[in-house]
Image (cartoon, rainbow, N blue to C red; front, side, top):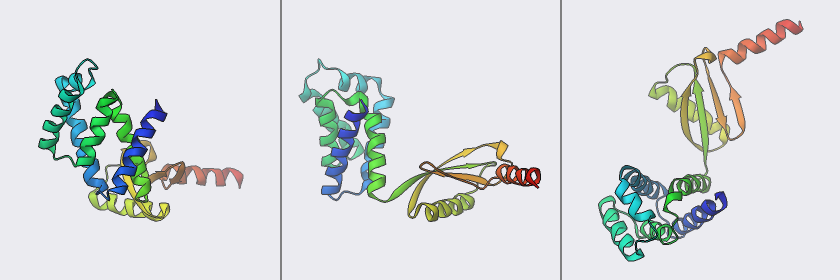
Length: 179
């Protein structure tokens, strides 16, 4: 299934790039639709039901799109997913699309793990540091782990930058043991 979701995501990313659409607006439209779909069992059942004709599904998509404000490309993409009975894969397709769109925009995913809650200023500083490490912009997600004692760990892709007090204490311990 991952291959199928990747094909849909790549095809849509190509359409977005060719039409020179704002990736963030597209992402917001898709997220809004996904939220609407997740919040409405009736809508989900209607769009995922293969016995309901395509014309009815497209009318419903158009009604939802009118409220959300879909671009023509987003509407057509969702209509294709519906026509091929792939609407249940929307979440996975969106994850793949977001990763592709971020790559195209030069944005890396960064996971920032801290010992304590971070202020907005701390987050901005860590995102700036992560961007410098990644060589571009980052989209950061945050977690807390009290066992770090202090500092932070930044993970970009498979690379880990450990600036935690716990790691520094472990290094100091190793130096003392080896001395």
